[in-house]
Length: 172
Image (tube, rainbow, N blue to C red; front, side):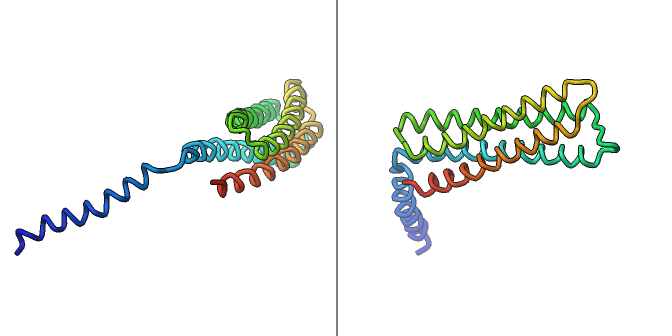
């Protein structure tokens, strides 16, 4: 009897695995793009949050610096880091825009317009911060004000991004 058990088990496994592999092969055409949207969207969200976190860390440092004097090296490092993350977010958003344009997805394009505007505002404030940080005596108050504006702009971008990603996750 055991000589019949193995072929029956193999047949049962085959009956289970073939339909499962067929179902995976029949994913809809949008499955790939949703996966790529997820990667680029998640990476953009991570970059925006990292830029905002670093801006907040710098503001905490500048507020607690003795006599509100910050070291130019620390200020420059903070500005560079914040700028790098904003640029990364913009690159991921540009990829998403290209896909949305190709798919004529007007709702996604509208969300991306809001995000891009907020990222442009953050970039403008970042450039002001960067210019201030190039000076020998960095004005802590001015850089903190730039960070405050960066934070507000990124908060808007992140909020719209979160709504967009939630909508894309449920879109079939």
